[in-house]
Length: 143
Image 1 (cartoon, one colour):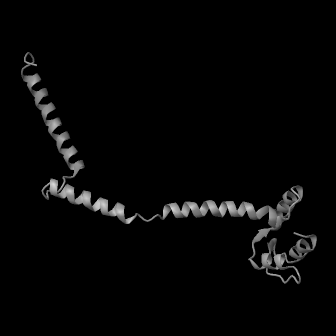
Image 2 (cartoon, one colour):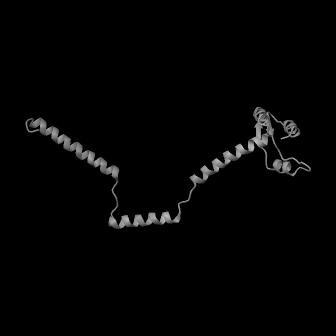
């Protein structure tokens, strides 16, 4: 980014914010296309820090930021695509076949609630242990 562009950007500061806006660049198609791609509002402090880093790397702020932003956006797109995957039709068909097989094998009988079954077994065990305690109290020598 040339010193002239940076100067123009600084002139457009408003309340500590910087706006990179569409500008007309006669004769320089690449700069004109870059300027038309959009704008980003950043604080003056962040702009200064970006300029310092870009200057140290002998790059423009745009050349410094573009690969960083491209990497971040690319990673975000991958995460978004992974979280919105559609289950392929063949997998769904296999799931339905397994479901039908289970229904045939169980002869249409619904599966019981496992949590309820565990509660029942705990209750039966508690009753059994209580019976053993009662027997040991009544007949200590039989236990």
